[in-house]
Amino acid sequence: MDRKLKGREYFYISSMLFGLFFGAGNLIFPVHMGQEAGSNVFLANIGFLITGVGLPFLGIIAMGISKSEGLFDMASRVSKKYAYIFTILLYLVIGPFFALPRLATTSFEIGIAPFVEESNIGIVLAIFSIAFFVIACFYARKSSKLLIYVGKVLNPLFLVLLLILFVIAFINPMGTISEIAVQSSYQSQPFFTGFIQGYNTLDALASLAFGIIVIGTLRNKGVNEPKNIAMDTVKSGILTVILMGLIYSLLAYMGAMSVGQLTVSANGGIALAQITHYYLGSFGSVVVAAIVIVACLKTAIGLISSFSETFVGLFPKGKYLVFAIAVSAMACLFANAGLTKIIEFSIPVLMFLYPLAMTLILLSLFGSFFNHSRIVYQMTTGFTLIAAIFDGLNACPPFIRNTSIVQSIISIGSNLPFFEIGMGWVVPACIGFIIGIILMVMNKEKK
Image (cartoon, rainbow, N blue to C red; front, side, top):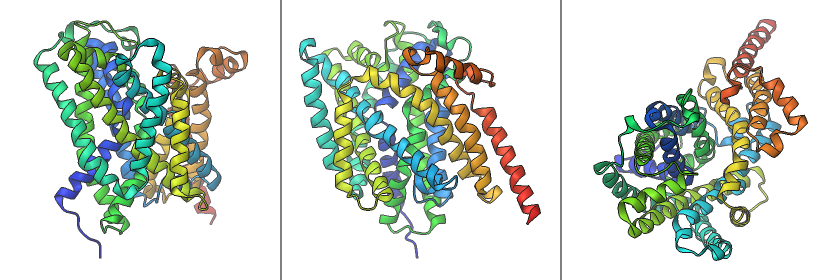
């Protein structure tokens, strides 16, 4: 018989889940969005919350409701080959190639770089990234300890530091939001621009990765029945969603108000550093360093753990600790490329992966209505895949996008509805779903 969790345990699991999600991008992107959106920050923030909060919550719920053991199990409903490719690609993106290196470089550029001379930036970054991933790997070596490290220690510390900054900023606002200028990218479609910006948090992708950690934590606490795991996952996720939505909104509005005294920054990391320095002076640099390093470290622990757990499942001959060390070493190497390069090359990959992740989440959530028919999964995913390629190529850096071959491909994709706002996959996904349903019904009639 399953054990029933106590209220305190739900709180700790929610805290762990929030701590795993809330990393580097979660701090810097809402602030920068707020600065650019200006007086349109409300609509931009709503769009951002859908992809930055709503989709991750649906991802966690989908993992529980669909009774999946992890991302590979969920993606296998399309096909085994697709599951291997999609799972490996997603984990490489949220692991050593983009998310993990970004955690280290964001920590460094906001928390450490202001105290380092320009000529020494390279060597100090190398030393810092090594230390960062050694610490993260050390705490991730035993995934069963994540609830203690993240839920009970690191996350409460992070929230206290962030609360201090919010209280000071909203008691003494830098400007009135209604009077803040709107940058060009947020003038015509602030909602959809915010929606796309939510991709940068990587949280919808991470929800598919962190699901295995939540399920594992519940089982360690004596919850084994699939229906009870699903229910406890939903209960734990509700508090996480509320907390994430509140903090995202406060960061966005703080960013918008800051333009009353500051110029729009190149990225949210710079903006966050400038805001804290404005309110707290030199001490502000120490506060923001602590906030960012704690936020990034706790998320790095979760990513290393989920990456290693999943790859042990994909390749049973491998060892958890070997995968943890390998992913940490690769992330450390890529971290030294710098934050700007990481963000630049991550955008097209996210534009490709996010539609596939979103359709997989939605199909898993509502799969009971079509009996999780494989043909529905395959048709929806196939049509989405083609459109996602167009969206990904269109978001590539200029030296790739402006080549004749890529331009020819993009010109075909530009005929899709909503392509200009990065949502060209929506109509093809719906068409694929409808075709899948029709084929499913036809197959039933034949039988």
